Image (tube, rainbow, N blue to C red; front, side, top):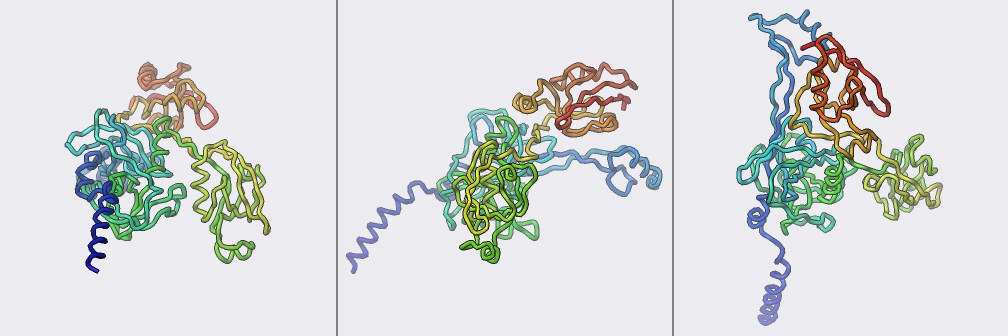
Length: 463
């Protein structure tokens, strides 16, 4: 018996190091890979009502006049202009290339006027937002630096439920905080988040951890910590991370042009319950039940019908309805794919050419150096890929329209093509053109809005 136990102990001693040679303990992991994790702080200017008004002032001039008339100033008679005050936020991120490319969550930098990145060595940089994608909650930042430490990327498909994982981030602003736990589940679907198969963990995640990395015990990033389930606003044992392969696919598209191309089928679907499976004659609950087919969409053109149950997409089984949006979204628009459909008790094969998911043409640009031009416009220059996509040679994106511009009918999201028939391609060119317009006079602004163009008279008031 003693000999047997001795042999087993010797065998365990040989196997354990072999199994654990690539596995780090938490302290070694953080020491080796922690320097690639960054703290992100943001500043957003928000408008505050002047003292004496009951709540925040609206932008419309007529409404402002209403409040001036019916809500007099306070007893001291003070009533100043609308004020802009800074609202600050914090988050986390991690470096994926030595030249300063950083991944974080889109909600961390959403609407920020300035984004600052702080490294573990206390150096700080003003970051440029290369692009954001709200559907997956991924953002790509860039700082001007070289030879930076980078994380090693892992394969989330190899994660096992119960496997230990580690998060590094800045909860509540406490920089470089480390927490640990296990993978609780994989492929989780969350309400209104059909494009991400979330990794669920019990790693303690709190506000400020958002955008930080989730490591496996080999020191590889397998996810971006994104959300928590909480009734109090703090950690309650359920956290969610975006798989790193999903995030990197989005990041590559954001870096190359700022637009995410996702396939579109044009159907509304629902889960197949046990009762529905029985009523449709299915052997078990599976697939995605088509509840609505959008008129003129790819599904209608291919002959898909309401009450069809989609069992396979491009050869891959659709076990749950939540699987389908991910599969479709991950497929390039214009691709021809095969659907296996259950229709009236029989399997049917349907070919469909996917469209481009509507609403994805939002142009994402950095606001880190934004400023208001004469006339009340905040503008940014388009990238070459964005101009190619819109089939235009020049143009400036309207990020915000206030004052004269708002009164002229210029809207956020418009593309300004020309001022007084002079094409503008840079913000500086626009400033020079507007500077030449006398106060009280109007400039003819050629605007691209959607698929059409129109002229709007921008009268310079001198405000």
